Image (cartoon, one colour):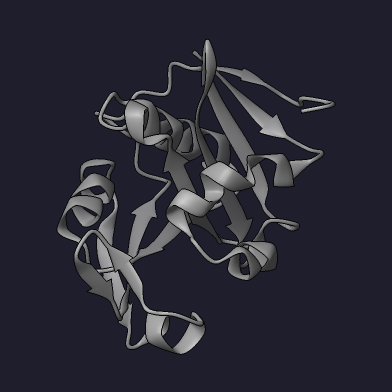
Length: 167
């Protein structure tokens, strides 16, 4: 397994990014200034985008794994990797998601804790109703991870390539 930071041609990963954020113009708002990471285990399995919020905080804006590889630890490995990658640059990492039990549970298992809620985020910012399974997304639930606290259970054993020209 290896994780690469993608510098060029980030839009080539749009099909995977759209699994986590189905409106392309929303992705276009954060992808250019974000750091995109791709996890490969033979072939591409998962991607994520992290953006700076301020001098002390960054935000995981998108993380997606192809459906056939979900539940196999790729998303968790990617989260562990970005915790290690950003721990010397930021004090905390945020992630926002809909109120979906399985997704909230994933982030909590990765070490995030619930932080605050943005009422009507999905209904106010998306041009169509958003669903995760049969649950309509209305509020954005923000979770926070303190990057200054050592991790215990999330593994970051993936090899990292500093850049991936042409990818």
